[in-house]
Length: 253
Image 1: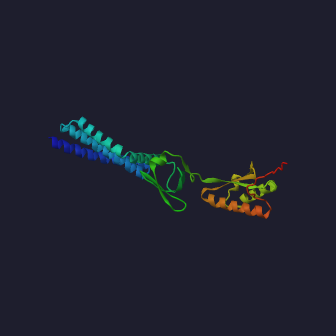
Image 2: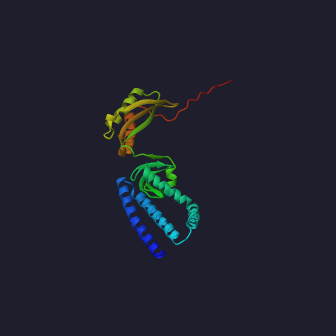
Image 3: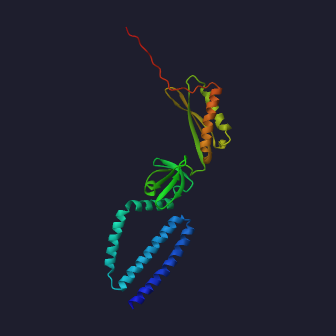
């Protein structure tokens, strides 16, 4: 009789596992959940169902459930302590996949590392740097640090600050910077271009420029505009000074 009961419980648990698995799969698909997270959560649900079946079967066979719970609790505590770092990474991976502060192909900066996200696993996130280095970051670390998602928005603002000599024509310099921004084909002129005096520094008047471009064009625009400003200043006699210091010498008798 006990064997038949155990077989019945085993069959019921298998049927329940299949029903729950199909239900969770459809639910996660409707939620558009990351496949890695959905597979992990379904595996956890399967383990819970089988654990419950074991408890029920043990109770039918006369084995105290309290003893099984105590044994599993002790084993779980030992495993948890030995895998503390790994479990923290898995928890961080689930948070990253659920909250989605960034995705694959995004360019991120976090904790001194930056690059394009190649993959987001349960335990580690892999990024590729601009010089083609592969960096693997524990998810526990990245989920607890500040992450800058550079490519999250469609447009980026290109901010530049250039110094000119105090004897140079400031208004002319501002007009030249504006023209360089306006004449670049990848600058979104309709979003506005701003040129302003940023600072009166010790050795130069610092003039700033701001213009918008699509995120994927940011670096090309930045490099081109810097080069264009230098060429325009050279052609119009605008000085870009080195650091200078005035020294007054006093002769005492």
